[in-house]
Length: 275
Image (cartoon, rainbow, N blue to C red; front, side):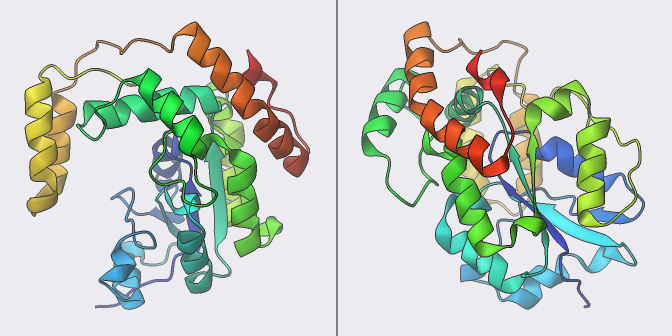
């Protein structure tokens, strides 16, 4: 079986709309964006599978100009970024970010809804703010919003000219412009591509018990996509409670120096994140 070496990666961050961007790029006739979002090769699969297996995942890319995938956890650890850059030193990299407070809220409820988080949101904020490690951001809700640290990690691995940063708010407000920038960045002609609506929409399950059963079954079953679909079908239209004002304010204060540093790195402002 043949394979292809990916030419682009969407490396981060979780709960910032990377699925919508990957879906939009996948509509382009010259792009092969892997239909299984989050292959998790460089963070998990590389321990059991060699690089040829990873290349085989793109065997259906045929004559696509740009070939890639979106695993938004890659940017959360030095080792994962380093492994990706060693394997794909010339890849075009997309780092998608989001208002860090809103991203944290979405991340927390995603993990809570799918049975991966049992603590209250207040406990998460209190514990994560007091226990954030210097390097590994994979197990916290708070630290992936420190975009200055993440961006520095990414541009240590790839030249800045190969890295594009997109704000999720841009994708929601005027999709054509950021999607066009992404197309140009990965080397294809800009086209009117639709990222869809409703991404990052967090809703509560109809049955929390069923959700826990599905989550427990997921790692052991070969048909994981079906389990995932069932879990999503179990979601209602009911939204989780929003962040309490004091927690929101504390997080705004925590993220402010990181946001300022990120703005200096990019030479642009993210004023809406302070509203």
